[in-house]
Image (cartoon, rainbow, N blue to C red; front, side, top):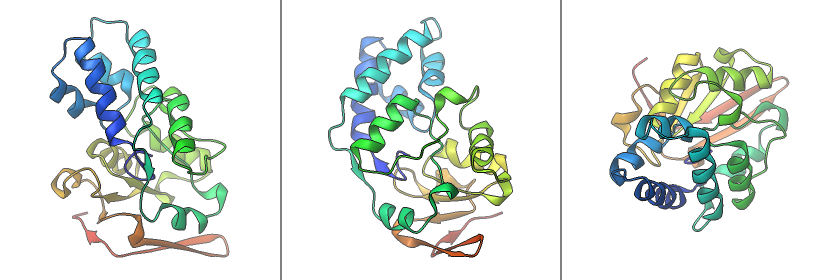
Length: 209
């Protein structure tokens, strides 16, 4: 979601900066840990002495309240319009409440069903979220394509057995080496349906397989 469909980097960084200062944590370390990871796991890593569920509610409320600067990313609407509604979904490290709020604020069509932090026991870089996403769509992971922008996300997608296309929106190419392909953004990608199959066309840098 973040870094693929919408940009909420400003909100994420402001929110985690606020929480880190509330809890006496080095801001730079908190920001490094938070991207592409479930908030509850970030909290457990940074402050294992705190009640992670209570802290999750605090950071969730902070993030939902801060929608400043949130915007859709280039190529998103064009790509989504070319895909049947039942052939794509969102697999995000955000909670469901936060994910739905951000997608709505960004004007992105919200899938009826999506995989959020609330629905898995192990978040990215573990493959569980993408295995759940494939099952939700009714496909095997190796039949699915994952779009990701974070190092933990590409590792999770690759481990799940999916083909992974990473964008260089928020991370350096060197951090995304687990991806199969790199694209600058979704303007490089188009989709066409042929009977039951969907063909993706894109110009990318191929990574080592």
